[in-house]
Length: 291
Image (cartoon, one colour):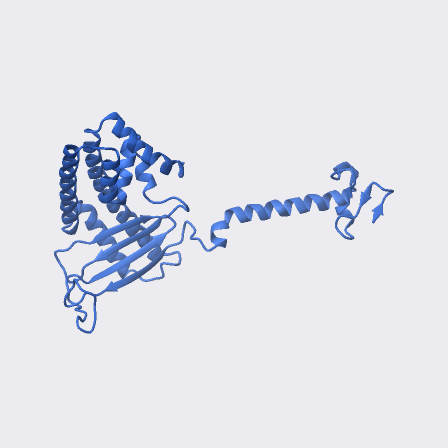
């Protein structure tokens, strides 16, 4: 339907402020004052909606906001024979030193598990942390990217995936039998250091002072009344537990990373340039997927 000669057609039904020139977009100077106000108001509403969507995008789709905290606890019993599943022939033993209570916290940064062994006074709290996952990016990428040498990246990746991959890649790089023997010896030393770290962690000897603060904060949290899902003292104490537990968990992870780095550096020290190039060729296509 034309209007004002043949220069305009109706683009939006009967709303005259939506008229568009046949030759292109409408110019503001061609609009009446009332029509200009309507266009400006429409643009303003669109901008406000866009800003609201950006600010509240995560909460709109159910993802946690920066203030959200979740908590629940899980009791995991152990059988009379703790090394076999619980069954009619292997009933649960509540007083077993292998029985655990896991206090699980989570927020936008990730998850934190504080594991207690209530019937084992010699076993310290166990802390496990997990960073919030980035879609499409595996958790090992951060550790591998921290190494600048491509051969070192390949060995770190292989070790994180499992000793079998480390051996396979080294054999494909044509290491000699004597070199593989040295690698096997270095791997044995690495495994011994990991066993010692796990034992120190079980005995609470990695950082006793910090672990004591985690335990104290957890006790305060359990005694504090309220709902952790709502703003208040309960949530504040939960955040303190999470902060201390993340600090402790990061310290343990740092010990593991240093041990792996020492192991990897020992292997690299006995490699020739062609062998290093063969390993670099292995990791290069994998890393390109995450750059």
